[in-house]
Length: 424
Image (tube, rainbow, N blue to C red):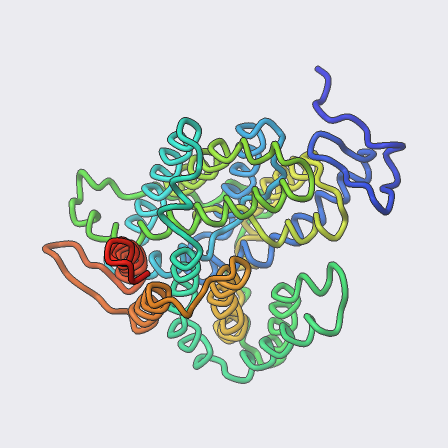
């Protein structure tokens, strides 16, 4: 069977004004090299989510690779993307694990994936215009920002367990960003973790007992989600997870627009397929013990730097991830990252999630002289950062859920009244 990619030029060189399209590839040795580069780019962020949430890193890596291959299949090899762990899941996972255990968090991830897949099918029929209407930039920016800033206490908690290690890690992240150009500069989070890990080793903070006992080859540590029909209390964690659907929509749509701008505008036509594919990948991860997935900005950075948008490289990356997940020893090694390292890296990381929300406002030139935009963003951020909560029966709405609701309701109510009264 013929492979779907045609060779770009001589397969060795990319001209200064050329782009390797999704349906093209370079020579296979070069393609494998680019695939390995995508693994490195996604790895630092992807493994952090299971380490922070207590999920098995090997299972997360496995579903990340499988999800990427499914994504490429469903989008017909038209949309280059790696599906890595989404940081939007961290806060609701922590809430669910504390309340009902890991199985309940997996159910929440499963439901997010199911809802996203359904939305993808709807978008295939109706188009994506209604998404833009429901979540204009002021709303989507506020939701993304409050999810990151809501996690600030978690970063502080890890910092307090190893202040010196955390400071060294944070300094390494910041300095790597400004000291190095190209690929190394883009991997500042990964480099920071490595430097912090070395610092922790000198301080005797590492424990390799589980690494020594683990096998070199074996299946990932799969875990089945809890059954909500056997344990109705699981439904109470849903308000914490549902806002994540909106974030995944925004991330996927933003990814598609970025790739379309650099390659071919027709890529926008696969928006529905992309949402469905990410939903299916997240659904499978939740069912079997992995973290929820999203399209990865880290890998977009690699493509922008190399001008190679070939989906063939992502097939290589997905297969690499699956192979790495089949080593329990590798998974246990990842799990040895100490709290101090996590405290340093998440101080920057969670703040960066918040700044992404601000960037959405700036990129879309949100006019904050308008009261509807002021109150939408201001109220949502305070509710999210302070982690307001509300209980209705067995349902508990945390700051992320309430902040998301506040952003959507305040904007649309003020917008509607303003138009009727002429005060907009």
